[in-house]
Image 1 (spheres, one colour):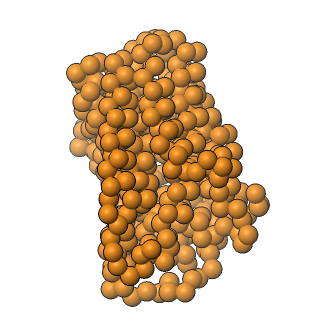
Image 2 (cartoon, helix red, strand yellow):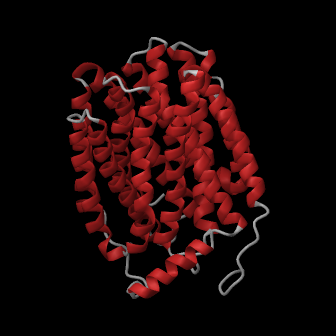
Length: 398
């Protein structure tokens, strides 16, 4: 791995660390304010909704020469929203702050992923580089979880949110000092009409079995992740764990991702990204179904570490599939990043809402059995449907 690629990974760690800090603390914070479980799930979903809304517009707006400016604006908004979380109590205020955070995070991560792919040093192994990128996401989640759980237990919720704001500002500093725009590409100055036409043509390319499968995997991968991310704190508190222990479980879950993802590139090369996605995601769902069997820290830690390992392999496989299956001559890099991240956002939206609905009927414990089971079955049915999608005919298609 080249030093330039590792340098590009540093801002990713900080961006995900600040985002995970608020993601971990927001559900128990709302529970502390006496919100019902269904309302918590709905409010948590507001962020991904606005992240989704930002994906395609920011992908269409992406140009290498203005990536830094767009990232700075996004990170300032992330810092502001993290700071404001601790001073909200009314549902409307929570929703507005979480919407700002989601909008900024959606735009920032879409832009930076496109920037990362284009800014990789010449001759870099893409499979390895994308594994390290995915590993950086997990490392940021791990660091954010470990730190914010401890801060919440000892200093309170407001201090935890302020920690997230500080980390966002550190990410901004990294963008200013470490990230340099990639070389200008031919056609970067496309006229507005051409950009709009390119975006519409890119969306038409979703009607392709390989691309549709990548979108489906991204959606269900994040749906399963959100069931654990949002409702583990509530389940942990219900069985007697502290927020420090819950943060440790989340942190080690992410750390397992961080260690596994950079090593997954050669595995994907050997077995193929489609095969690993088909097998790995249902296995991850099966592991999460074991959660109700464990009430102690050790057992829950083992379950989530194994789930983290499986998530890491599937995520890297699907990321590689996105880069390889979305032909840049048909789908510009920024738009591809927007589509790919938007699919994940839909999973982030559906996860808390679906989980909250199931938990309101079954309770928090049985949610971890019923939710993953239903998700795995619908996932396999969706892949079956993708295999029968007929590609759009037209110029530029294979």
